[in-house]
Image (cartoon, rainbow, N blue to C red):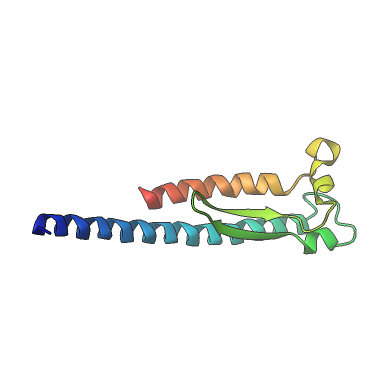
Length: 118
């Protein structure tokens, strides 16, 4: 191999490492935003801002996680109870909680991720 080919291989390897580190930073950002979104959800729900928390089961089973797949990095929040969908969709979504929180924090996450990847 020529020294020019070697230099190209080294340059490509450096780009790969740099991209992997950027993606790792975006994943860490997703973890941070998932935690912020859950914290916001719990604070607001404790003030009865969303659905009526009669038994505490639905509230205690709300969870979130960050994910990293081949084509996407992000976070999710979900109910751990089967009737969670009814809490969210009842009365024309009048008391929905998860979707507005995810939209609010998701928008901020996307903006921050774009800055990291720029």
